[in-house]
Every structure is written in structure tokens, then in C-alpha cells.
Amino acid sequence: MKPNCKYLDLENETDFGSETNKYRFNGTVHFGQTGRIVQCIKQDTREIVAIKLVPEIADMTNREKQILRKIKEFGPDNYNIVKFYEDFNYKTKHCFVFEKLDIDLLRFTETIVGSGLHLSDIRLIAKQVLVSLDFLHSNGIVHRCITPNNIMLVDRSSLKVKLIDMGFSEEIGSMSNIYTNPVGFMPPEVIMRKKPDASSDMWCLGLTLIYFYLKALLFDCCTLNETLAAIVKMLGEPHCSKTFSYWKNVIKEYDPVVKLQSLDDLLEIRPTTQDPAEREDLLSFIDFLKQMLVPTPQERITSAAISSIQIRTRPDPLIFNPQPDPLTHQVIGYSTLRCRTAPLTLQQTCMH
Image (cartoon, rainbow, N blue to C red; front, top):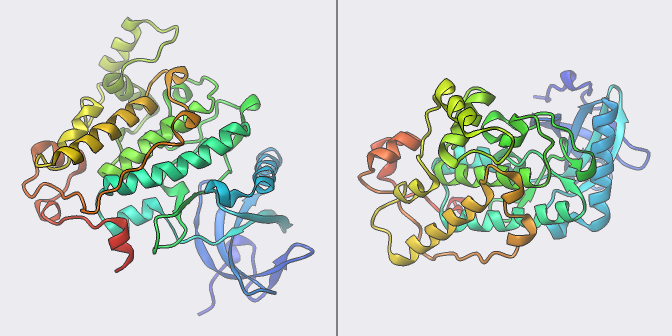
């Protein structure tokens, strides 16, 4: 059966592309946050590529085009960023051509692993994303939408990942206070309509790493105000012109339900029978998160400061508690049956 692509303004069996390269539609990949992604075949080499189609919105399209071209000049392979080939116009859409990657880590965690990832895997992912962010920030670019679905595996035989989707990216000197993140990943300064900076990426990365650990959002709220109240309740108030009484009233008004009283509660999510080395690794991970999840942007650690963190991996996988404590049920909602099954590491999963 031929793929249906009429809703993308593409016609089956029709070549489209730039003056130098032609592509043929080969199947829809998915709907991204800033455009529709389709799988295509490059006609001269038969290479499979991913093409992102976005509406011709001048400001946003031009900004993304400029940022992608800037990244391309430096060679993104060295910085764990998806490789951008070219861009062109097609009917009412602007098309960005990228290398085809495997699967984003949101779908991978949800549908293939089915549980939180191992700490050693999370550390390895974190180190690679930090290389990406350090490169972007040192070149005056803020990604603005670090989430699990914007980090992709290159293939399932390795833990190599790449950062994708520069659709919301902005240059540091001209950033806006528009909302670009899902509610659960929104930095407090953006909720408060302050202009963000590169530190907003660090906040989002911290929440993304916690998602990988819990397979659940740390702040699973319905509204921005409820999210802000939950942040203040768990992590403290940001240093700004607002008074302590103001923040106390915010918490009282929205009465957010927080899954953890503090980040230290992460110690109770995985088994209480951790050996000393495992516990030391987890304590180090929690300290790492605390430096990113600081409500005051100026006090967050920078990507440059931690891009060279040491990743310690263990040959034996971490195992969920066979008799999970109530906090585990409260935070992630695991069934007893699921908690009795030791999760595979990503390396083990990729071999199946």
C-alpha cells in the first residue's frame, strides 16, 4: 500500500527537493513540536533521510535556518547534534533535510524499555547531551526545548544519542519569553514571563534526566501556575522581587501535589539493598540534579562547568525492589508485577 501524504502537500511518486538533490516520500515518521517529519529517499544515493516540513512563518523559519546553518559549519557530529544537510521550499512548506536517526528516548523509554532507565545509562546520555549544550551555549545558541522526545538514539546497537529539533532555538542576545516547553518542563523564569537564558536548558535537562530515572514527570501538573507552585514547594522560591508571603500564598492557592518532598527522596525509589558503590553513584546523581534544578537561573550550574563529568558505569544492572515501598507506587505507579521484573539496561534491550 502506498503511503498517504496528501495532508503534507506531498504527492505520491513525485520527486521534490532543491536544485541539487531530489527526494521521494517514503512514509510519515511523526508529528514534531515545530513541524511534520517525513521519511524520504534521496534519489541519487538511495539514502534514507528525515525531512521536516514547517509552515512558511518567516521569523521562525528564518531563525531555525540560520541556526542550523551555523551549526553545520562546525560539524555537528562532533557535538552530538543531528546532522543537517540542506533546506528548500516546497509549495506552502519549508523543508529541512536531516540524517535519519532511530527513535527518540521518550518512545524508547515508554514502549521498548517500559521502565525507568539505569543510572549508568542516564549518566552516559547526560554526558552526550551536555556536549551538545556546551557547544550551543558557547556559540550563543539556546535550544529552549530539551525534552525526552528531542533526544534520539542513533541506532539501537549503541547508546549514542543526538539532540534534535532546533525549531524553538534562539540566540542568547535576542531571546523571547514565549512558552516553548511542555508544562512539565517549563522553567520557573519562563512561567513568570521573564526572559530566559542558557540556564533554562539546564533546568529542562535536569527534569529530562529525572524522567528517564522515574519514567514519570517530576512536575505532572495541568497548569503553569500549579507547576510554579509545585516547584516552589519542592525546591524553594526563586530569588526575585516577590516576597516570601507571596510564594506562601501561591502554594496555598494552588495546593500542588508533589510526588517527592525533595530530590533526596530519589534515594527511596530504587532498592534499599544498594551496595555502597551504587548508593554513592545515586548520591552523586542527586547532587548533579540539585545543581541544575535551582529555581534561580543565575545560580544553576552551566553546561561548560559539567560537560566533562566522569561517567561511571557498572557491569551489573540496577534492580527494582522486589517488594516496592509505598513511595515507589506513589511516584511511578508501578504494579507489583512490573517491580518484580529487573529492567534491562539499554545495551541489553538493544540486543533483543
